[in-house]
View 1 (cartoon, rainbow, N blue to C red):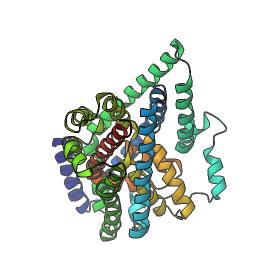
View 2 (view 1 turned 60 degrees about the vertical axis):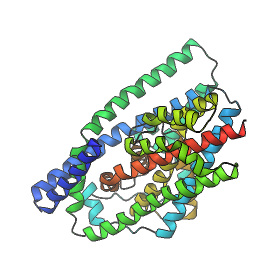
View 3 (view 1 turned 180 degrees about the vertical axis):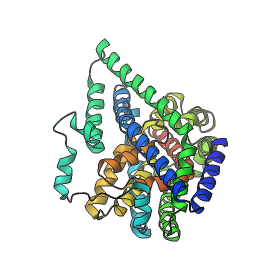
Length: 395
């Protein structure tokens, strides 16, 4: 709660500073915002790659029994549903483009990206050099490599060498988490800068209209997934969604305020076992996995935000492009294992990898805390549904 109030205060201070119209102050805010954007890009790529590798290496090695199979199937179904709902809403609501001045002031100038055919774009994702994707920051290629390495590690027989590799990767991940927590601790300064940039725009009315429609798409998608799609999954398995939600409400409410599925996990497990009556062997296996890979809200955020940023960068949103990014958002969300502000970092990295105007994410950042609250509550509710359905199927 204190952090949320601090971020809101930073948002207000930044807006006031931007309205002052002082050129030297605007220049300083642009500099600070650029520094934070570069720091996001610096930490995001290695964090995401390690998260994907350790996710598949750890959970793949736990076996492919019936419980894991049911969990994975329901995770994929609900996550794809969330992404598809987000895509449909984006097409219907059709958020407009931000004015060029808003983007250029946030990121200097928008570089023209070379035009590629659909097949050229697919080929550019497939790496032919293991070092090149890291040097170029090609996140799509890195995700492909991370997926392959993670699955490969899970298939290796248990040995001292494998244990050393996995522990080393987990240690690097812990180090990056520490750096991210430090960056988040200083984030109010970044929010002041991003907010000042936004309020300094001459065409603030156009910005507000475009951002407003974007936020409408993101939040509406979460609400539909929460109150319509997930209950339909439960009804299809013969479960009463009102009963399940009522029993799991302590976990959902805690997720809303903590914005952390991992921090909510003990409450989620206790609610599932003591209140909903899920068997312990199911709850204690399914929920930790779901906390890591079942990210409905994250998939929708990645998809909608990516479409919005690409559209503003001049990329035509064809059906092929939307379908490709539905797949990318689902795979990325599944690999987004326990990273603080992971959806935001991951989207920023994906957009940076294809040369889209990532400065737009700086405009989104001040309102991300509200989106994050709703997304986390939806993620925990989805975890609860997957757990309940798996327990029901295996009884």
